[in-house]
Image 1: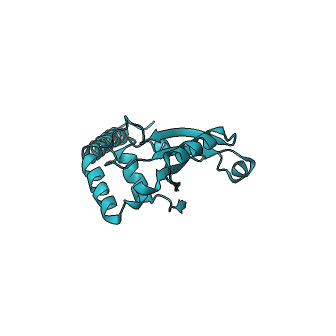
Image 2 (image 1 turned 45 degrees about the vertical axis):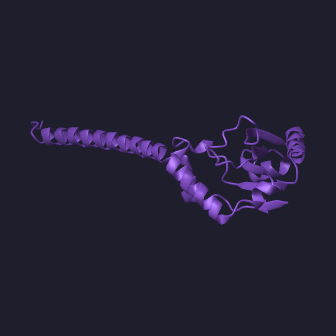
Length: 173
């Protein structure tokens, strides 16, 4: 079963940009995302194999949250496989989308069936609390950068002002 998802909101993309990607917009790879639900793990493996063997698909990144060594605490126990990919075909080239990266979430049905609005809300609260220190550090970096820019602009304005004032006292020729 495929579930069509909306595009990531600009607010959420900005939040993720600051929280996770140190203000590097090129690292946000999930603005366009879709989910496919599977009955068995083998079906997910078969899907990944098909994706990897398709000549028009370039796999950018794979997050295997189903691996035994995956940190289940990081995603509150939710397990899936996330494939970030781009499609390079005549159609995507013509539309200017051949470099666009999208996310495909491959999930077992029984995980998806156990996810409710309430459990997702708890996950969002957990994620936001977990990452609050990172967001605070990113905000502080942004504020320090803004302060440096303001200081430089003020210094430049003062030196320009001093130069303008001193030109008033230069003898005319």
